[in-house]
Picture 1 (tube, helix red, strand yellow):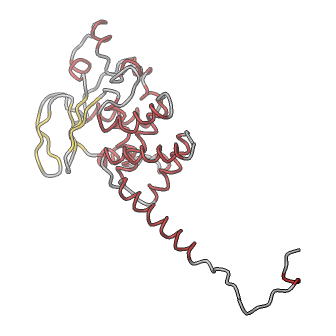
Picture 2 (cartoon, helix red, strand yellow):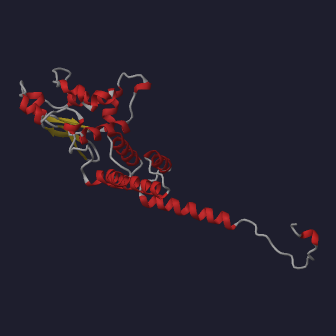
Amino acid sequence: MADEGWIKLHRKITKSLVWTDPQRLKLWLLILIKARHVPGTVPFNGREQHLNSGQLVTGRVALRDEMNAGVRPSLKVNSSFIYRALKDFESLGMLNIKSNPQFSVITVLNWNEYQQSEQLTNSSRTANEQLTNTNKNVKNEKNVPTTTEERAAAGFYEQNFGVLSPFVIQKIEDWVGDFQEVGASEPEANQILVKGMEIAISRNKRSFGYVEGILRDWESKHLNSVASIEGEEAKFKAAKQARGSAKPQATYDSSRTISDDDLPF
């Protein structure tokens, strides 16, 4: 990427969720700056990758390092933040991501409309805002995840806990990302959240804060599937039963004569 040229920003960025988070705003600007303005081929990790306008090839570690360049330690971000923020951008309809084990190709949606045309008509802006408020940017009216994998935890919450707020949606996405960091796939991570919510319901604790306490315990043990969680629970129950059976039992001495002094009254 050449350090020259410029990008365009629509004023409605100030009404987007990105505007409320300085780190996410910085990441979004970095993506716009790094994206190709014209089609071409770029080298990445020793291979050539063809990109169209509005695309960039990168990885979460590479983006993390660019975000942290020249930043004091207290303001640095980790690769987990990059992953979560990119998933947020994708769920808001700002970009899409195609990944393989080596790198990801990020495509900024509506690139040609916002970065290449000189004028934007009011009608096109209304239909296709690149950055707008939550209600216009989300994939459906309730701002809920839309893929099968993403719906598992969010759908279970909505059916059993209550209305999905943007805050809870963000929490769910964060936890899905956290369990992916310890080796779960996206469907597995969603099923882990569902199991945590099931346990909370069984204990009559319909609070996502309570669910998070359960999830923190599993994450700290690097449990990355429902099977591994159930295996851990089985071991805990077996150990508890073993401790119970090891308690000394009271015995009766038949040779001893009972007197009035032995009676409890």
